Image 1: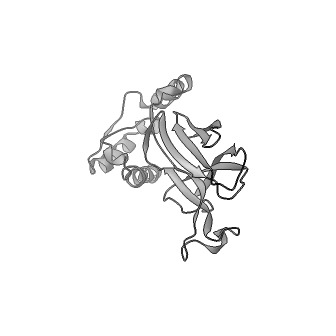
Image 2: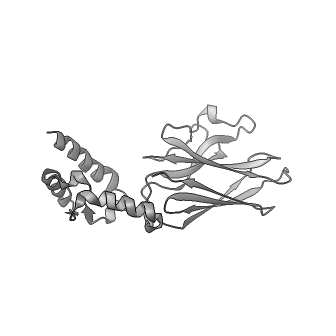
Image 3: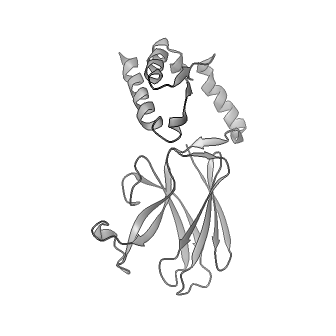
Length: 222
C-alpha cells in the first residue's frame, strides 16, 4: 500500500529525528494538519505508533486548510512566530591547536604547524528551541600577525556535529568580514553576538581595540 510506505517514513522520522531531541522529549501532543492528515488510515497509523510512546495525536477541524491559513498569517505577520526549533547546527570556521594523531595532516597550517585550519566550532545545535531575539555571544581572535581583517564564516550541519567545515555534512551559510584597523603583531579580538529572529540570523561584530561595529543579517531559509 502506497500510503503505508509514506506513513512508515513519517513515523520513523518522528521517532528517530524528532522525539529523541531535547525538545522532542517534551512533546505530549501532536496536531496533524494538511490534506494528507485527513486520511483516516494516516490518522490511525500515526495515532497507534505515537500512542505507544505516550504522545497524543489530534486532528483539528478543517485540517487541510490549516497549512494554507498558517501560510497567510505568516506572510502577513512573520513576527507571530516567537519560537523555533533549529533544524541545523550553526557554527563557524576557526583555527585551533593541531591534535597530533587526530587531525589530518592536510589541515595543518603551513605557516604555523601547531595549528589546525578549517575546524568547525558550533555556537548553537540542531534541535535546540530558541525564542525570537535569542542571543549567543562569542569571541574570536586573529590567527596571524598584521591580519588586515577577521572573517566570521558561518556553516550549518545536519545530524552529528562535524569536526571540520570540509566535512560533507557542513554547508556554507554566510560570511561577515570585519576590517582590523591598524593591524599589528598583537592578537586582536572580535566580539560577535548572534541574534536569532523569527526568520533570520543577525550578527553584531565589534573589533575590541577600535570599537568598530558591523551589523549583518542572514535569512535562515527554513
